[in-house]
Image (cartoon, rainbow, N blue to C red; front, side):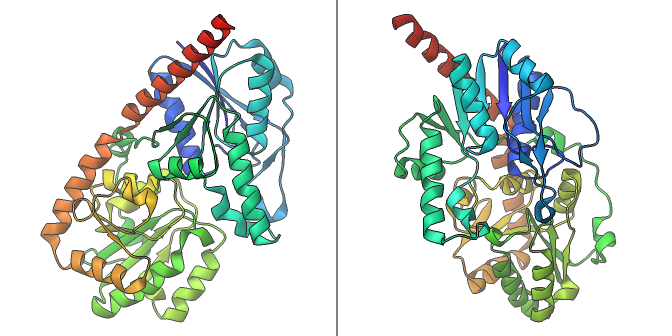
Length: 389
């Protein structure tokens, strides 16, 4: 049995890909007989203490209340756990504040460090009100310097591994996507999602999921959707998720004259996302900044064919023409691909079945077994280094 300390900037009750990754791997590792202790920031909306989770003090700001900023000083139970528990390995999921805490204990206790590079930081520099090029260079430097402090790096796709190499990251890298929780997806009970949003049972429903934010390229999706309903008026689009661009997206929908056919759920529980996918006919996705595109895998597990812009992360899971369609980042080809699938129910069904088969190959269990292999390699390498020193 391994004892693993996991550090993450974000965790429940937040909803994002990092939270899903951390919680999925932790759950499966527990099921395999290993102990996982999670260290994260206190969240003002957390309902109760969670077993195996230790919270660092945090501060929040009025403009980002749901994203608390950790105060990177362990106190109380967290400090005792870190100093007294015989951890075999530390796994960091962030190069930021909690990530630096992970490095400090890695160095202080001489424990191996694995780092998962979840987010291409330079793609999010628009959130920082400083000169763009300077911020982008700093993002690359942070990624490089932090990665090179780890014993081993995990990336969710080969494209991200290649990007880190271009940053001059020298440490070993293994590609392990976040596994799809197929068994749990299959237990989510359906309900009348269409009725809730006023979508007719016999209408074609397109669904997208994720954070409603600038980097998700959602105006592209709405403009393509306008072209789609010009040809096929009885088509609807449901956006499952919330975020800072909700109002702007609603305003754009009104401006384009598609507001009656477009709905945003706002922030919803993961189970509600799965229910929405099950009610849909096609999953559509326009983000070009993903490191994996976890929601694509979840949609595929729900037997949905996928139409998505052709980007690195999408290419790692979509086989064009088999389980989905990859198109240029432009409205017309995107609309053409969706309309072609709507017009061919047989092709949709075949693609949906192939999508499910692909999702099963990256199940949570399989991906966690690969992660465990990396853990064991890193621990063995550290023991060997100490032996020959």
